[in-house]
Image (cartoon, rainbow, N blue to C red; front, top):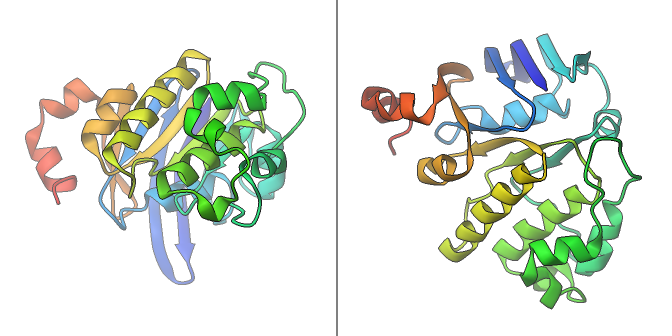
Length: 233
């Protein structure tokens, strides 16, 4: 569903992604693993063209999207949940959800507020609270829910377990599993290997913006040297 081939991305003169390639098949959850600064968030932003790629190809459902503006990529059915959440702090939970609303999309679940409140009971309880009154974990939930209001076919989920309480991490794992059961395809950026193992089908490890491993979690567990070299703190 998503094909990234030989992508190079820069911040100014800093070469961040180096000939990076990966594939995300339809209906799967693929975990993009690596330490801080490995290039995971840059990969997400490059797919959305928030960071323009200097070379390489990015295809979504067979269509080349590198070079398109981010809003047009979103309209194709790619949803993006950024690491820094970007909740509208002066808007209520309901108002934040309304901001993300898009028309029905063929082949995608049409999400309603009630469906999202069933998925995120914490948000249902705080539906009239402003974004700034929510905890970090609740803001993360709201960011995911707001993205789902766009009825995406594919979601880029950047560090969903970062900086949130363990109880919220467990809820996030349950949510991701449920989204997969609804047919949503997900590229998940993570540092937490255990969390990624619980929710994802396959793993891609990057370091210095380049791929160091791609395969199943069974294959990764069988190679402790790879884990120790690229994932250990």
